[in-house]
Length: 330
Image (tube, rainbow, N blue to C red; front, side, top):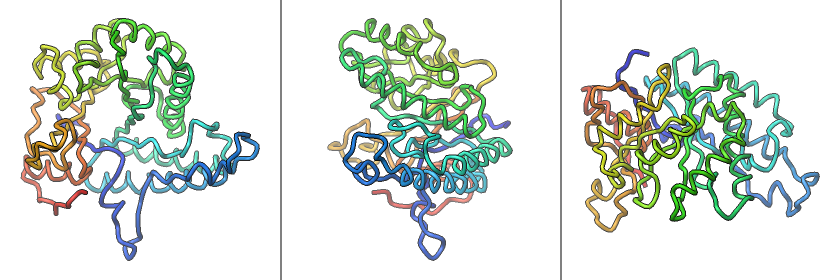
């Protein structure tokens, strides 16, 4: 890879998701199942129909390869994998699925394809992963299981533990006590597997009551060496007296020298739609501004509702490439 700036997108490919039946139909990596469908109302794992979940996971893994091939065909070599590849993954061990061997083979094929084509794959577990909860040990335990499952997916894809394939989360709430929350979070971080810890990174927040880039550096990176994903959009709402460049460079200093810094970029939907009723932090459909990298080599995941279309649009605006057909995003 010799690009100074590499753009990618998150989780859903709009082109393939909306592909008409006459061209092969919908392609998705997030098939799920209603809990009642596979659990049957029973709390006894012996009664659960894991075949249903394995069936969905195998279809998701097959379609992941379609996603990766589409990305390479369109010169996109940075992609965030969604969290729904294995539906309800915190309720069972992955190898308990009847189709596990088939799924594992397909995920290794996906990993081999990504490596052969220089594609970086990351993931971003959702906001319910909370290691610093002051009240719920059950939530912390579920968080650890969920994070380990994300790491196991990268294992199945043949990726060695590295921040190259980052598992990105937020600290979540500070509960009015940043030092105390950080101590709880770090205590529970020590419970994670070494393979997971070698992938886990933290991202700055968009609320002044939560975690700025400076806070993540002081409370977490200094203590355990964890890298920081810099989110441009979040920083505008919680700069903590740092300029954008200062915060970006501070985050850059936390990454190992052999792993390229990965950032997130989005813009305000309220500004895009010129509608003050829309929450300012909400993400826009497309990205209109040129991204200031301050001369740094960066991987940037575009967090826009138009997904891959936003990446293609932005490249066309600033590199004079053929302009793609824009799509309306609901």
